[in-house]
Length: 304
Length: 178
Image 1: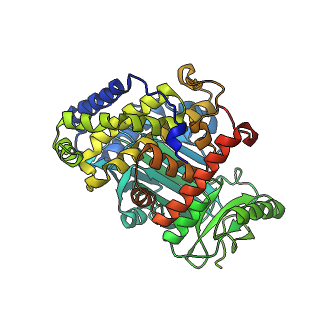
Image 2: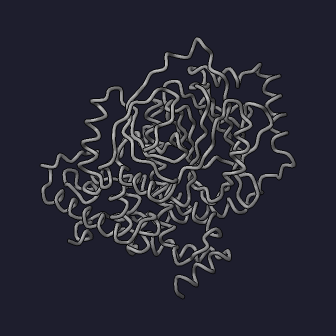
């Protein structure tokens, strides 16, 4: 079978014009002045934050913790830099940023409960955050990030910074087959109020974790998961993930022995998980050993 | 002048060489983009943005023999990002009328190749797109996706069988239309 025989797509005559437009944009970008180097970007951000606090009366902090306000703030620049505040109250997974390539992630902090993630190209801060997906989960409590179009990331340095934050239990890299992407997880000792804010010019992600208000904290509930056996973080796990590409809710988890599993869930009932497991085992290679397990909120999966 | 010479010149800042490289691949880049966004105007935007992104990051390309693989990957990333942004716009209720409803420009009722490919799993779709529209070899696809060449071949033939079944079986497969 030759697919091209079936391909009758007409190529628009404006195609070359659009390519020229892309090149012109690239030339303009290259000719633009690079962002000024900052002697201490964290101090600068501290000053900016102070300005906001004085002028806006703790507007950022409040906005980040009130879902309705945070939603309204999305895409509205505050002092020309805040792009949006992500809220995890009703939606576990959030995304943002711009498609880029070749950036490097650096992580720093100037406040006890805040981490700033910056992005550089040729040692200059870039103007936008690379495309990212971030997620807050409760089995265990952890925040994950995936940054695309990133080629360099000092995971160890980032882990050391994140460990300075309160409630952080562990920080670890998550493998991906995409050599232009990086993923990592920050696990917390308890359910926390996480706020993730995206800034531009320069692009920055700011993560804040605070103890959850006891009034907000619901009753912890257990849930069911489909789990793989335990592996070292490596290619074998990544291949398993590729097999499960079309399924929702797939993630890597560090287990109680410090090795890693691939899981799918949470499911509310054991029957629901078992039904999904049956389907996976019929469709996915290497899924024979997958099993269903119940887990309490905040708990890591057992190793097997 | 061969492609490798053009790439070296483009890396040195020669815009004409870069334009020659991209335009000679314009058709396949457009097809890869269309395969994901299913809309002429959006596919053109994707190609334009991918051209821009590749221009500003060309100096990062170390292995120039993978220029095509690298370029097609940028187009796919750009297309996926556009789809993601449009989904987000719909979710937040800020639908831009101009791009909210992709218009099919082909024969409206015809079940075409692109719709058939769209029914595949994401990895199968990517492999077929890279192979047939990106003109990449199995070896290059394997490297890009971080899998063995044999795995790619197996998945490729499985995907091809599915597309064949969809094209020949037509509507009985319950093809979703945009």
